[in-house]
Each structure stands twice: as C-alpha cells, then as structure tokens.
Length: 148
Image (cartoon, rainbow, N blue to C red; front, side, top):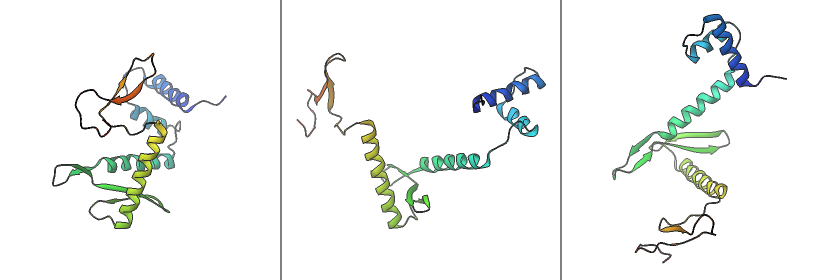
C-alpha cells in the first residue's frame, strides 16, 4: 500500500530525528535536510500554484479608504479567456470593472444558493425552541423593517 503524503512527511521527520537526535528543530530545517539528501523533491508546479494563491489572497486583502472613510479594495479580479486577471481600482478599464462586478454578483448568488440562506433583514429574529418548528417573524420592538 502506498504511503499518503502525510505518512511520507512523517517518515522524513523520523529519519531526521534518527540521524540528528531528538532535540527541537524547525520544519524548514528538516525539509532542507530532506531535499539535500534526496528524500524529498519539491514539486515546482504545486509550489508555483500555492505562491500564486497566496499572492491573490494578499491582493484581495489590500484595502484603502475612500473620502468618506469606507474601506474599499485596491485590487479587483475579473475572469477572461486567459483566466483570472487582476487590476487596480484606479487603473481598471470600464470593461474589466464590469466583469468584476458581474463575477462578484455570481459569487454572492452562488454563496446564497450553496448555503440555502435567503436574504433576511436583520430585524428578523428566530422564535421558538430547537424542538419546535421555528419561523422568522419581525421583532416585537419598534424597528424600521419594511416587513412590519
């Protein structure tokens, strides 16, 4: 039976400890040793894909503030025939901005469908206990819900 990736990595860790003793060691040092001794080979394609994912996450998280103090994203992603591309908010073309908005709408719709959650106003509160059939109804306190 073939070893899983986790089993292979744990075997490398155990081999390292057998040859170097049982003292504290960083995973990076074990990995460097494993590469040097031919026990581990880095898959460049996987490493490249992971680095690209990390870069995309960093770009997704970069924000600034508008003149009203609202947080806005600096970078915007949009899908093309070439795959997902990114541009900055201050240089993006109208065509690419429209692609970004369309993709954002599709993702939001997909998330609602995936979770089965329908948009409900914050003024709705769940009534009933876990053992009873619960429903959503407007809160009893004065609120600005259009559903009152």
